[in-house]
Length: 252
Picture: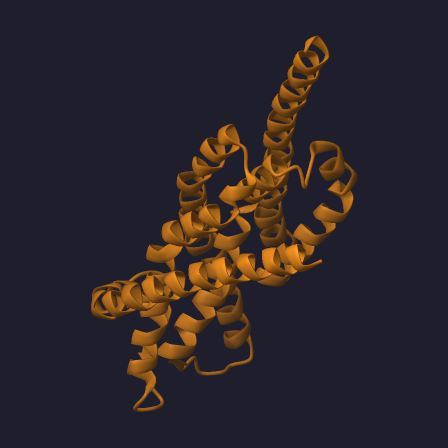
């Protein structure tokens, strides 16, 4: 009992150390992001859809500061992502076999790439659809579109960040399969429920029309199917290694 307690305390201490490092790097990245925010804000303000429909305004002396803080956090989050994933890998590494350590370390570049792909998909596909839909509803009610810059970018981030995280699904599934927490059979059994959840998410983040829902739901469902395929590939290798180990054990 004491050994289990000591082990738990060691794990929690290690986790706290990793979290402190992540927060420290995030703070440094946010400071750098604060200085890099202005050209990005100016670019987005003069890009579609904002540039063609509306003029962004400020309704409070703090709105400009709020914008800088929003962008510094977003930039810091993206910059810190590889470091965060590395710290996660370092935390679980002691429980992995040598070949698993090497394999899981390779997931980090893929996770970063998928995150950036998710951001791009959300910005170039989902965000314009959502914005134009809300703008059309506003115009149909004969209302004047007067948008605050802080509110506009909050609306943008509320779409971009969740979608970028959803694009991490294949990497998460591969990682959990490598840890033998998931397997393709279990994922296949959960397929109908996963589809339902993904369709609900697509409906929530897009305008309430069938075309928009389909445009978002299909890529998300494809991500789930790709996750199953990748999980099956890893699981097959695990079974082969287990079979080889059993054979060697019997011979010994």
